[in-house]
Image (cartoon, rainbow, N blue to C red; front, side):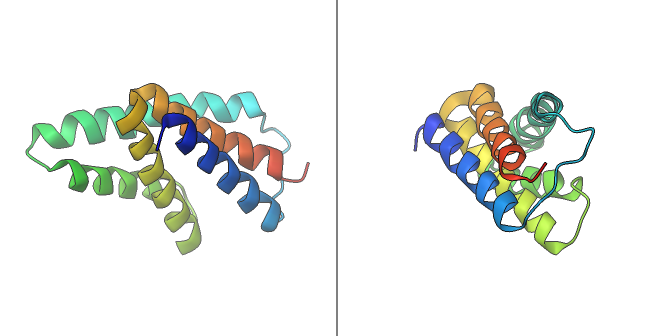
Length: 122
C-alpha cells in the first residue's frame, strides 16, 4: 500500500470511530494542536524508538514495530479499547513509515487525527 493509501485508511478509520462513538471535541482542542503532537510522537516512537534504538540493541524489525506500537499505546491513557486502538494506530503508522519514511508516518497519523477531529461533535 502507498503512503497515500495508509493516510486514507487512517483518516477513514479516525472519522468513522469518532462519528460512531459520538466523540466530543475538547473545547480547547484545535486541529492544529492535534497535528503538532503528531510530529513529536512520530519522532519519538517511530523514528527514535522503533527505527534507531531497538535495532541498535539487536531487536528485529517486526519486534521493534510491535514494541514501539505497544509503548505508543501505553502513553495514550484509557481503557482496553483505547490501548488496542492506539496500538493499531501505531502499527499502521509504522507501516506508513516503511513506505514514506518519517513523512509517511506523520501523514498517516495526521490524517487519522484530522479524521477524528472532523468526525467528532463540536
